[in-house]
Image (cartoon, rainbow, N blue to C red; front, side, top):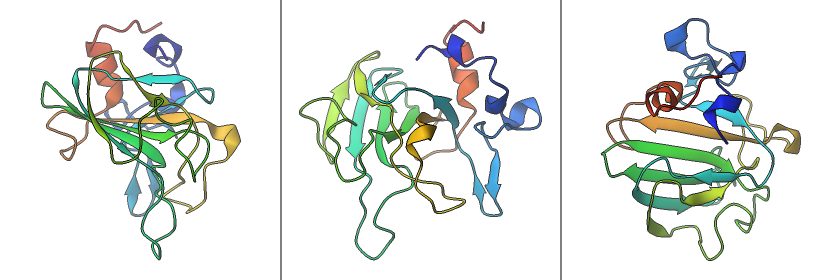
Length: 172
């Protein structure tokens, strides 16, 4: 997944660039929900890699009974980068009940691993659902939801497009 494949996508326009696109940063998806990342369309199983060295926490889509039965983020990875920045990767894998195609072989929900920049964290998919509608993501809408938090994974978010541009990724 190279930034050059997405840089011209009008749906990824963020709030800091004007009117946000449907998959863009800070797009309003309902009265109480703002999209905190960008959605990068992909094929099921496309490798998702760490943007920097850090500590990766792996979580499955399931939640405690009585809540909803699944987490809107789906199978996901939270990366605490060596720089102090945080990153979140959502909707990995294609099966809500299993992480078999969401995480690298041998990695399970609840695992915490040190990772290097460029290391495979997981695989793009469509697990989870829409906070705005409460519906599961359809198989036809495979994407990676990516968030960037410069002051730590639980800190305030910023437009991930700016991060990719700063990393020197080509824009065309």
